Image 1: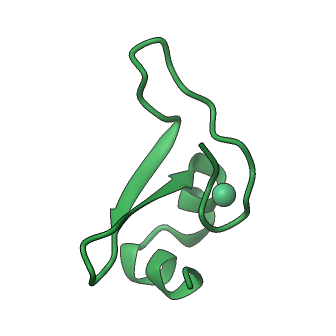
Image 2: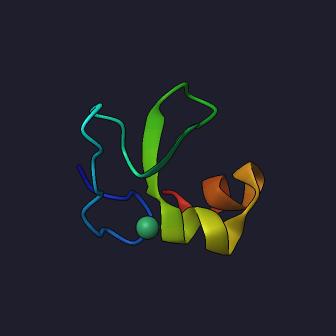
Length: 52
Ligand SMILES: [Zn+2]
C-alpha cells in the first residue's frame, strides 16, 4: 500500500495496521496517508486538499 500524497510505501505493523492513518474524502473513499505526511499536514482538511 502506498501513501496517497507522497507515493511512498507504507509500513504495516504485524497487526496489519498501516503506520499512518486513513482519511475519508467527501465521496467516502479511504486514502492511506503515511506518518510523515500526517505530521506535515496535521489537519484532515489540509490532507484532503493534497489529494486529487
Ligand atoms: Zn506520505
